[in-house]
Image 1 (cartoon, rainbow, N blue to C red):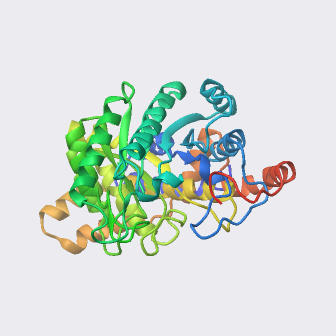
Image 2 (image 1 turned 60 degrees about the vertical axis):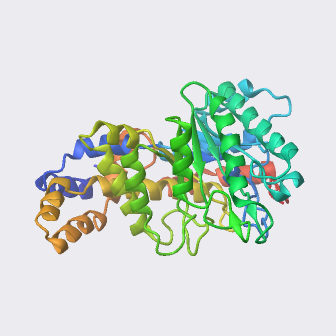
Length: 414
């Protein structure tokens, strides 16, 4: 019997007594997938300074190698998001990139256009008052749609740094219309079956106005564009006090929740490991998602089961691969706990107006120690029961440090 087996048996017996189908829960956990980002393996960091990390990936192939290691350790991170032009192959051979990823055991996930770093984008990209700059941004995004076809990607992930720094700098209504025109052109160029995920951020880097400032703006545009356009929720892009799970519930009900960028906010940004500051919030968000996954309403279940779960973090002082493993594990733990909510009992308490009972039912799932359950699931999947400890003992960190050395900059950051 493995070291965790006795604890798992006790937990499984308790869950079964509560009417929870343990095998069904395990199947759901095994099927939950988290995408990792190529740039998270490079020397990326805060907007102030990227501290060089020994062994950080420089080339896209090295990023794929690291992503493959994360998947090998966790079993639930089979795809890698790429950022263009940071991951643009010198020879332009995206088929070779796709093949190399497959040889390592992973696939290309979302394609992310970069329309915020070039000097031309000083006054914005699709919102820029200069038509030539808008055309440059549009051409780049359309190029990324073509890259989707070449890499078999099904998601175009869009984030814009567009905005204004001074009142009167530009016509706010005109900027809105420029964006709508540009997004419409992109939408018409999406691959068949591909999705456009529109991300929002309520402030920064512009100081006066932000062109995609909230989920309502992204939602309104996705409605205008069509079914292939959905909203991408970044957990860090919200003010304190904003109830993210309520936003999630609304977008799920509307069929417009397309994906997540997992990270964590301390104030209103996303440079922290997901679940590192407020794990309860992460659980509550997952509770809304799992509730929808298990819903008898077809549109809810279909939307929830098609959500793209993606990590979007800059690991600046804590390493690269190990923090990514921890991020995936934190998501898995929150998802597992959400699976343990006794939903029928919860609904009874809600309809009876029993406030504290409903609250306690939800909290009982959150307070459950799911580590024995996750260790059992991993063992059944053929991955390490303790991924972080196994990674530490694997020698991979020492290997990449020796092979790659230290580079002052990579992944597009300076």
